[in-house]
Image 1 (cartoon, helix red, strand yellow):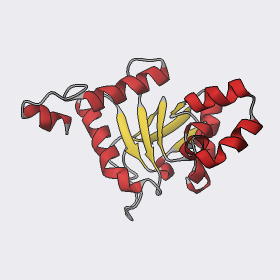
Image 2 (cartoon, rainbow, N blue to C red):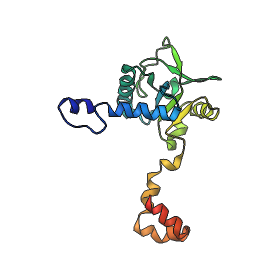
Image 3 (cartoon, rainbow, N blue to C red):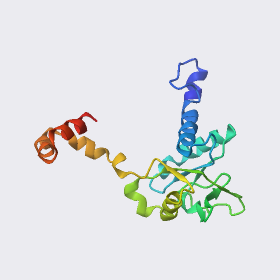
Image 4 (cartoon, helix red, strand yellow):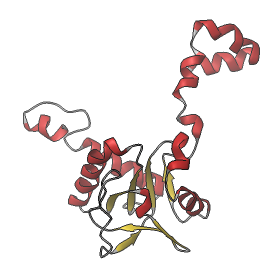
Length: 180
C-alpha cells in the first residue's frame, strides 16, 4: 500500500518501502546480524494473514534477503538448528503438501506469527523453543505471554476494578502500572 500511495504522490510515513525496511531492520536487530535468514512461521489459527506474510517474504526476497513464509509443519530440526523450505510454500489452510524437492535453508530468526495462547495447536512448537533455548535460532516476538495479554491492561483501567487493583498492589506499583 505504501508503494501505491507514494506512486500517487502522497507522503507515506516510513516511505514507500517502510513496512519492508522496518521488518528487515527488526529481524536484523533480533539476530544481531545485518541480514539473517528468516522464517515467518504462520499457524493455522493465523492463516487469514497468510497472503500478507507471503507477500512480505516475497518482497524481502525481491530485495535480495532470504525471508520465507512457512507453515509450522514445514520447519525441520537438526542439531545445527532449524531449517525451512527455500522457496514458495502453501499456506496453513492450503490442503496441498509442500514440494519436497525444494532445498532447505537454515534460519537464524523465526518470526512467529502465532499467539502463545494457541501454542499447543502449533506443530513443532517444542522444537522451535528448544532451538531457541540452545541459541540456534532467535524467536521474535519473544516468548513472553505478558506482552500479548492486552486484556490485562484493559482491566487495569476499568473503574469497577480500581479498588481491587489498589488493594492488591502497593500504591507506587499501582500508579506505575496504570501509567503503562
